[in-house]
Length: 599
Image (cartoon, rainbow, N blue to C red; front, side, top):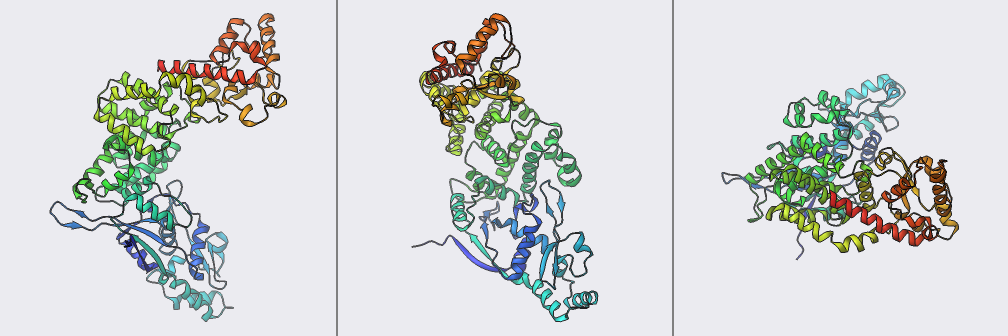
């Protein structure tokens, strides 16, 4: 027997807008940046006027919850697809303000030419043109009279027929009676089923993440301050990228400015660090995992709905407790001392630029680990060491790449079930055994993908150890990363092409890359290694500079060693590219191991 998991109904647009105004249906995105441009709002109104279909809205019924007195509170309906269309209709028809990309409220005004039956976004030319009804929202106001409007319009435009203008304006006014489809999903559906239905129904194939569902759930709540919590998450993410937004926020949202959330994020106004600019997904993952000891955001959605995982009932006290705990988690996340100290730990491990962050989820769990160990009152020096090592391990092993939520869930549960320090050390030993260092890691370095996580770790190792750039006397790798210095091919690309290594997968091997100053890179050009390495020896013998400023032979060998270039490059490896790559991979792996052990 087929079980119907949703119902489809048709409602006039004005009824849907009334349900939203009365908050019977929640549109959680209403206070978030409106991503449509004004012309798209115009096109939506034009489609309705022409009688074209404008798609369905998808609504998810929140489960009803049992209150402490035993009564049942009916769950609110939340729009999970169609927010932009509804916001556009509310802006154009009801004259509601939207929030732009800078979280600034503004109007989108759509104008109508009843002679040409044409819509446009209000502009200065239309403002002066008597043939246009400047703002169509006036047509839908209760005080609007078609008769008076037609009389007034025709007095200004004497060459038109009243009946034609009447028909045009009446057709416009009646678009609110056009039915729009509502797909209402059952409250018993879990988040995975809702996601699957959404994907199958949504013609654009857009995938809603579990974080999106959680954010909708948070925004739709007013009883426990979810709407303000949603703002805190959005504003923090925006401020972390654009600190200059602070003055605008302080001026435009007085209610939020007077909240504890605002005080927690005020420090961002002077923050220029972009190593970790979290998204709302990042904030939810970290806050939820650290506070609830769970890793799957579908559990957060269920808990915010009041789900009791044992009885499978929905209870009001669970809703309240879940919002309280999530609020604590978000506050901990935004705390200046926590955030700054965590960033300092990443930087102290050599990850000094956001270009070196290859896995946002690895960063997220490292922050979870920091907050967890701090809560467990582990001494600060030990926290720093464990977080550094765990982060590097998780990047090297791509621990949070395939199924991040499952891995988050697995790790956080065991960190709480066992002694956290012992669990961490056991995982590090198991994941980074001698077999990994000497066999698997050199294989991982056998790639031409410069964004490879292991290469980022190698660069972090060079930063941590204070290594100089290739053939540089004073300039460090850290300097070359922050100022975006060159990646130099030790065996020049054009030289390799000439001798038969003419595929990107061969000449762009990671083991053929070093960080170098531009002038050194240019000076070497396309010279074969046999020639320019011989010239380097001559440079040290005569003191006549050709490549960089190194004139001492011991200093040259030291520079090559810190860049993991085998000494045999002066001899047999100068012409044996595959052998050079194999030998250098071993040295790079050895450096990464030494670096990890020092963390």
